[in-house]
Length: 236
Ligand SMILES: *Cc1c(COP(=O)(O)O)cnc(C)c1O
Image: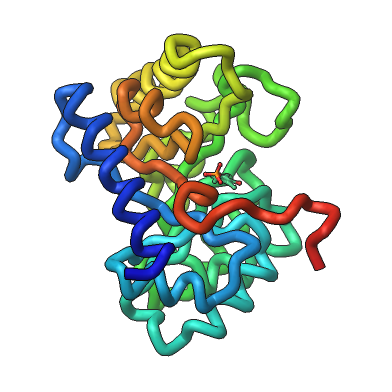
């Protein structure tokens, strides 16, 4: 087996163990492989090892990879998980399957308008700035219900849930507490809006166990599958 295949197996094992410890069915947690900074050949390897859902942070890099892997398109699911500027929404609406990083109405409206009619609705999560962290992306918790109400009404979007990237925490208990706030907020939205909202996109390589304990349904894992990324400054 390839290294990528081995690492994928290991991450699947971690997910299964975390689910077992939480008394959850492992089928309730999806693995999103975050392939940012890695080339299309790595995605091919992961696909050969059974992985279908991939996350990209940078729009142009994601588009280049989608094009390079056009032969696999029907078997792949592409998720945009990075900050989105309004002048970049069109290709995202046209080419991706999911967007996890919707944090304002203007972006959501553009994505809905620009989603081609022949495609299924774009699946979206609202990114919540759950801890008011220095990472400034994300809607404030107190503004999330109002935004969710408006996004849910957009015709070419399907609102699926919430995404969060909490600041690093000192220990697992603190991690779980922050993730639990995201889960609580999602439960409040469900009650208020009467929508299924089946997705909690939270947990990465370092904290996926805590996220699963708090109810995550989709963990976004890069390093633990593909290895370390070069520092930002070193990227071409
Ligand atoms: C890079 C990234 C990940 C994956 O992080 P790892 O620590 O490499 O697992 C997950 N989510 C987002 C939004 C990211 O930018």
